[in-house]
Length: 110
Length: 77
View 1 (cartoon, helix red, strand yellow):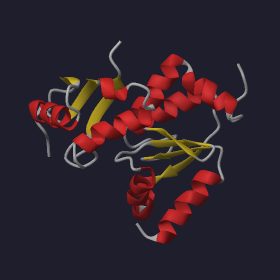
View 2 (cartoon, helix red, strand yellow):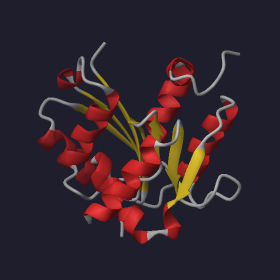
View 3 (tube, each protein chain N blue to C red):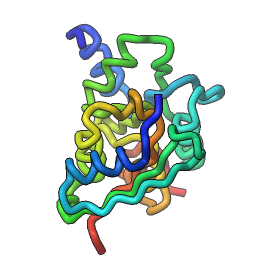
View 4 (spheres, rainbow over the protein chains, first blue to last red):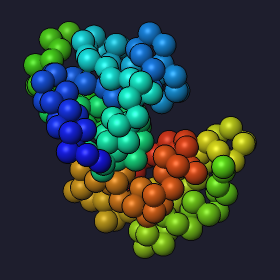
């Protein structure tokens, strides 16, 4: 990964409360795993930024090195890597994800 | 590109000795699997690290020849 790509990713991750790197857009996800990740965030009432990695090959490859994580989607909250769609689903079911988002101040208590 | 369930299981067992591995072929097409990996070595480890350990055992195949692996990890109860 070039330093430039790393810096771009770092900038995106750190300047947004919640960012989802995904395939496609929240309205038109291009992969079942990305679709599931979007559904979870929407269900929790989270407002989030999304980055469509299919539109940017440098980011598509770079994000995997950035987090040492081989797959998309990837969720970041307050600059920290949280996980992919399986971890999101586990954390959603256990209530941890709602907690994390509340603690991070990116959603309000329901 | 597809992988055999037994091959996935072997790789994980080799990479994480003593792990209990259950593989389910979700779609019957040799391309969409679910894996549940239970290992004592996961105790106290954050989830992201647990999944990274499994991905490391798969040696770079994840996201490549292995497209869809729904992963659940845990320490033994």
